[in-house]
Length: 138
Image (spheres, rainbow, N blue to C red):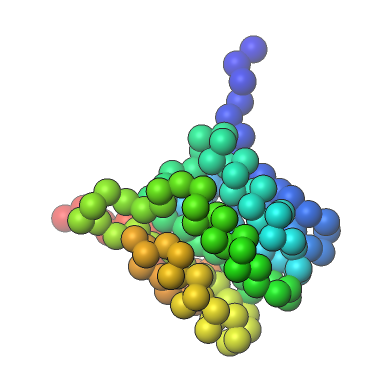
């Protein structure tokens, strides 16, 4: 029987968790409540180990229901897990969906850990997905 490759992972409790999955070539990371830094690290580390996320993959980070404290040590650890980003001369994209204006300010800090990506804040998933969608071939 062939082994089915996992393309999603969930870590945490019902109200405090991190969830990552691939949908239509986009990496979705949802951070809900107040998950711990180690939970965030575990999700990304497991995803990398599973080989199902790309280092330059478009990414939507949904922190619209995040209510915890940003663990900058965990963000740094994730940044150091791999050489994130597209080949030289190209720029990747990370869209953030936020529900709280204060969280939007923290995106600039997080962006500093992933310099080979363009970072943009949105207030809804549809707008974020539109920005992440690849340009139509002419």
